[in-house]
Length: 420
Image (cartoon, rainbow, N blue to C red; front, side):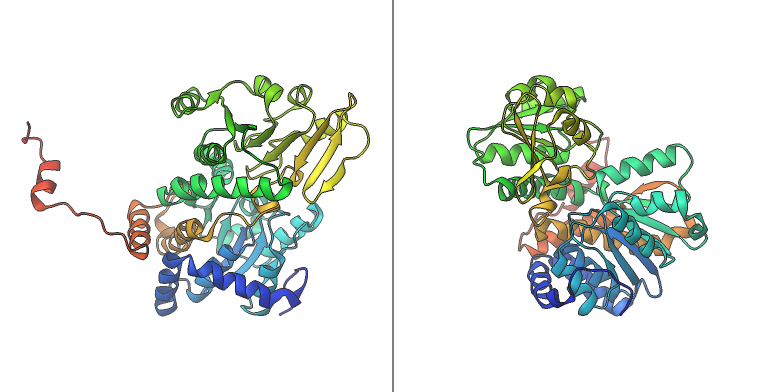
């Protein structure tokens, strides 16, 4: 193979062992792969995927490959790539991969271009970078594209904005909207892996610290819960009154970010918006504050404003910890360059939750191939029957049984005549 750009092919065997380890925790995707090998539902379909290059993603790529897809993979974040996994994908599984941990923006977009040079029939995004690049710079590719899938909240927000402006040129399935994705991946996956990333980067004790979570969507809920479980005193900041009320009812302190900035020890943004932590927040932060992000893009923390407030360049005091010294002498620590801390300094979500997320990706790709001609150019949710089937298989794999309705119960639930 010559169509790849990775750090070191010699790491392939170590990557293979970790991919195999993750596969043990991904029984739903494994069952889909077994069916795909027999039925080849993606035979001849060119797929360009822009995802975090992790062990779990590797197992999704193997599943799509088993289904007959012709795949190219590129990283969806400069710091999320696991170089040994990229090596295994290229050297062992012969999947063209463009991903190097720590790549600069020029290389990142060169890799995006390489993935699009594959002339995909289908895109598979985590953040909508492929889709947005196609619409802005590579519109000649639209002729062959039948549809796409999108993994994360931020990407879905971008796609819905495109759809609202009548700019979306092909249908996209919002995998993030699946209940078996956001109820579990976003809440339990992001919650655990973000705490893991912060601890690996800093080795800080969470117990007794004021831990500020900005955003109380599914990711924020999971992070707040896990931080509290580690003994932190959790503060939530929100702009949505309903979510703020829910956070209060869940037992968390809720206040504006400006107030939280004065007392917080650790901050983490999970909103999908821009400048959530801004200059006026940095101006009142404690000496030694730790600031991280677990939203998709590195825009949630206004790092340029912090740089302007600081003396000289930041010091890399630990791997993934840039320490800025403000002009009044305070030290403020930015973790993972403001990028996804759970992937920058840790390994991302546990395989068992990505099992459901990537099962949705695989089945959504199959659904798109079968139904693209009948779909409009808009954002679709994952069909309910796919969502329910993934939940059923997951329970089966976990050895858990549930009840089924009797005929009498079904009749009762579908009747208006029955009463008390």
